[in-house]
Image 1 (cartoon, rainbow, N blue to C red):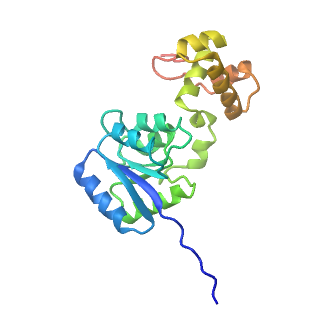
Image 2: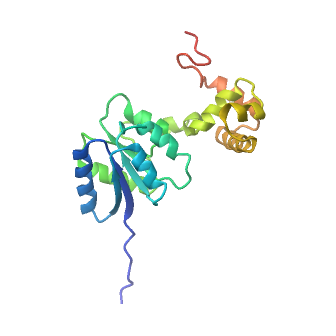
Image 3: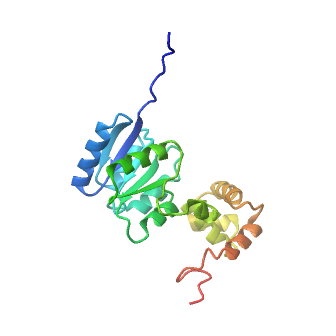
Length: 219
């Protein structure tokens, strides 16, 4: 007798897009594909967030201009959650959206101008733990540890550069000192440094604050 091989469980997926036509079309596409199990859809970032915080979802496909939070903010919020789905941004390839999506913490990008099959393959690859960003050199981006920091960790690194103590960081960021210590530990690990002095040195050497109106801006 031939051994019975069980089929892999379908990938649980949720879709979010502000355009009802796009949302309906995507729903039909994923419903027809046996590789996926469509959990829910939403027209807003808040609706998407509320669902995935309650229901386990492996992959989320989101538009970039979701009301009211927007795609970038939604990704940043979810990257702080341990059980969050891996996110694929499905949007027009304009205004450097693929790079912005990756910087925010998305796992993949699929352009709306591409074939539908590309979106499906991107989702299966992302579910398998891969990162999919066409036309971007992912290796080059991943070499910058700053891109691996959460928004909270970036805020702490910025505050560290001002010489704030843990107590002052706690007050400024509205979190407990224990939470500050937790974030600092993760921050040091991601930057491969041992203490705050080395973290501050890393901050300035990588010119994290060199943005218009920010620390290090020479304009």
